[in-house]
Structure formats: C-alpha cells, structure tokens
Amino acid sequence: MSQECIFCKIIAGDIPAKLLYEDDDVLAFNDISPVAPTHILVIPRKHIIGPAALTEADQALTGKLVQVGTDLAAQTGLTEGFRLVINDGKSAGQTVFHLHLHVLGGRVMTWPPG
Ligand code: AMP
Ligand code: ZN
Image (cartoon, rainbow, N blue to C red; front, side, top):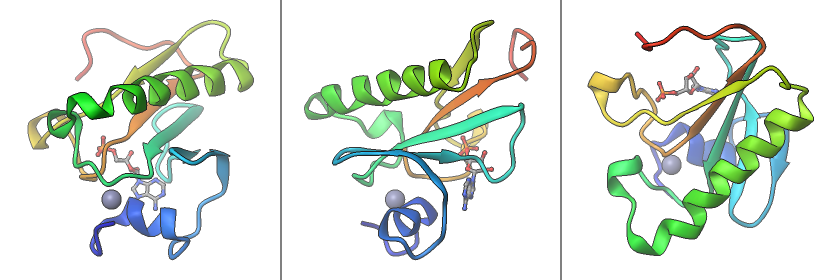
C-alpha cells in the first residue's frame, strides 16, 4: 500500500466507494467523474503504478482485470459495445498512479481517442 495513493485509500476503506465487485485480487467501482454513461474502474489490490511497472508475475492479475471488466460490461448491459482503457504516464492522461482499467460504454465512442 502507498500512503499517498487515492486508490490504496479506497482499498483500505479510508475513502468511500460503492463497490460493484471485489475479490482477493481486484476491486471495481464507478468512476467519480464519468466520461460515459457507464464508467467503471477495475483496480488490483496490489499497488502497481501502471502497466509499465507490470512484471511477468502479474500476468494472471492483468488477465483478471480484463476479465472482470468484461464481465461487468456484460452485467451492465453494454451489448452494443464497450471500451477498455489503461493509461500509462502523464502524456496518456494518467492522473492516478495506481494501475486501473477503465470500462467505458453506453454511448458511441470515437476513434482515434483524444
Ligand atoms: P486516469 O486518468 O487514467 O489516471 O484515471 C483516473 C480516474 O480515477 C479518473 O477517471 C478519475 O475520475 C478517477 N477517480 C479519481 N478519484 C476517484 C475516486 N475517489 N473515486 C472514483 N474514481 C476516482
Ligand atoms: Zn495504490
């Protein structure tokens, strides 16, 4: 756990979040500032700053983030499609330096992303 990390504080229960899913490895909750009708974040309990910091030992965990995100997209009824996004670094728009998967849906997405 990182003392300064907002997502570690959510994991610890120090900052409230209505959890949509949790298990021993990951948590999911709604983004506080949604950019789509559905905007869910899936995060590992382990403090990893972003995808560039992943190691081979994290492969199962990474797969689980995608699986849980995809399951939540289905449960939320995103049958027309959805987008999974992981930002890495400031230029990509990362603002919280604890790995997280965005699950976005409920509107038509444009490509390329901004
Ligand atoms: P990123 O820009 O990829 O680092 O995404 C960080 C996301 O975390 C943003 O979409 C924020 O709106 C979201 N966020 C920040 N603080 C909270 C919080 N306390 N609860 C839920 N989402 C948050
Ligand atoms: Zn953290």
